[in-house]
Length: 311
Ligand SMILES: Cc1cc2nc3c(=O)[nH]c(=O)nc-3n(C[C@H](O)[C@H](O)[C@H](O)COP(=O)(O)OP(=O)(O)OC[C@H]3O[C@@H](n4cnc5c(N)ncnc54)[C@H](O)[C@@H]3O)c2cc1C
Image (cartoon, rainbow, N blue to C red; front, side, top):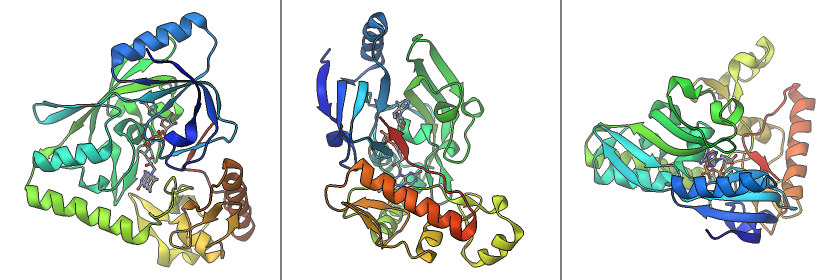
């Protein structure tokens, strides 16, 4: 067990932002994870946080005063028509496996960064697809009681960028494995569909700077007053239900290119706040507050973060 101290988290963050973790460990299997948890729980001192690909978390400049467990439980096993996947496997590796084995269903996730555990927890989605569409079962381990659970799709209580692991009774659980259902398809078609999504992202998103993807959730059309529904009728998108894209509202409010310190609201896709020059978490939070305030003043709407705060 290689328990490290004072590990700089910016090196594990897609944003390249974040101070040190008091303690830090990588786990490669459920057994290793159990050993770590037994040790930590017996000493009963550290708070625990989990890190996957670090593509959705804004880590504080002060770091994390506890133990970070970096998920490296990887591997893909074929179980009939399904795949049982180690939760630290990247979406990119799963898509490469899908192409090699002509498995269809996950093409919507082309270019989605991060691990399958992160995608399950936040029910990541794009191009009208959502992680929940493919999930059969999720295996998890209680961080405190080490209870092993297997939940089927309905029991995961998936919602818009949400699941039982993000805001329900699974909050204190470590997702260890995910079973996905895919179907046999045409290899060239699968490859082409994935490539289209990656190309779209490369064209539309500011991929040349570190980011966490979309900062805020989109706004459900249903939640708007009839007046605003009318005002935004032209920009409504179905993703996967009718939404007003937050990026359009930020653009309408003139926030493109707005800078605080080393952080900037992207002028290419304003829902991305990019790290253009050694940004701090404080810089990013200041921009988040500015955006929220302006949207509140102009439309009387409350933006909700899609990104997660750590530390
Ligand atoms: C360029 C870019 C584009 C993006 N595009 C999209 C998009 O189109 N759609 C979308 O939905 N998201 C998008 N994202 C956000 C992000 O990629 C996804 O949310 C992704 O699923 C997060 O996975 P991760 O492994 O990086 O999670 P992390 O950022 O490491 O963690 C996210 C949360 O999950 C928790 N977590 C991680 N692993 C586990 C585990 N094993 N058990 C329990 N909890 C765990 C963490 O504690 C944290 O709270 C984008 C991000 C970037 C940088």
